[in-house]
Length: 432
Ligand SMILES: Cc1cc2nc3c(=O)[nH]c(=O)nc-3n(C[C@H](O)[C@H](O)[C@H](O)COP(=O)(O)OP(=O)(O)OC[C@H]3O[C@@H](n4cnc5c(N)ncnc54)[C@H](O)[C@@H]3O)c2cc1C
Image (tube, rainbow, N blue to C red):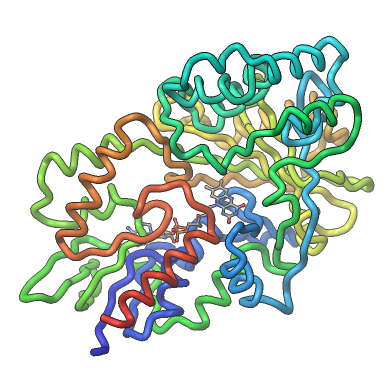
């Protein structure tokens, strides 16, 4: 192998895994003042919490799970999920199918009856909404899955494809549902029932461990232009020009296309039509002597702008000082939807009012607040997704640019898969 210089655009976990494994000279180019991307953690006023949404480590891929755990093996703990769903003022066990024992008798009957004698099974699903009715029946879909999903995706479910759902949304069996209904405890989404989390430092500890294995990292690098001349790539900022042999991009496709020259109009418009959601995370802390026992609570009801709240003290006891509780509220938004444009003050007030109304917190005095905004959070799988994505990725591929990770490959993957893809690409380029 002839050693090459590889410019790695972005410094999230996929870029870090790639660079850590690469035998080439890699230069990570990150626009922020630190690496980590979605997996970043904030440490502020003795609170430690992830800012791109709460992150936990779980994986169906045992090899990657072991690799990630080993990165920080002296600083990791295994926790058990205790998630709830806020439904008509009650806290049901999560996922909904495993919490139906707490429904009213009539509701329980409708839920089981609709699931087992599901009339929607007569027609093959054509979209995500149909898929939900087809697999879960009317009650679970109407009461939880449809409103919750339309909140988190900020898109009508009939406008979404469902080819991504298999495996991500496990389906209960009739027996399991019956067991739950009669009061025999069951567990769903077993692949993430137990999760790993760093004892100290938050989720970004995985990134920090990878960073130590990387060669060159340039932060605060504001890319102006990327171009190729005589077989060499040039990445230009106002202050610096980096020359390299290859480019691996982990930055959002739309942004990358904006830096390149001679991008065909049809590729540009395909990228404009790729849909994603942004995320606002509001964090509020209160004084509290009783610790809330839950990991996260899901809110399907539209009255609450947030779809999920989580409690970092149950990820690791070191995240929140004694006598205090910190809650992260996640709100999915899009430019122009009216919520995206709301001020921090409005969002903090909303979260406070609603959390008090839900009786999850009794103390009305906030001792700490913060609002974070993530521009590209969730990829939305509409029916033109594959067509538009292929146009963009094929163009980049032909240019010789390698796309890697959640926003560059524009796909719904977790950090375990981002790491797996980073390592895989490094192995591939190591033998070239
Ligand atoms: C709300 C939410 C919750 C999640 N929860 C979990 C979870 O519990 N467990 C889990 O495993 N995964 C979770 N994920 C997924 C996980 O965050 C991602 O899969 C993973 O972080 C993707 O890493 P990446 O390197 O591909 O992308 P990113 O983290 O997006 O990294 C891209 C990097 O590129 C940088 N960048 C962007 N533009 C430029 C530019 N122009 N120039 C230079 N640099 C640039 C960014 O600053 C960033 O550092 C969650 C994601 C979200 C949104």
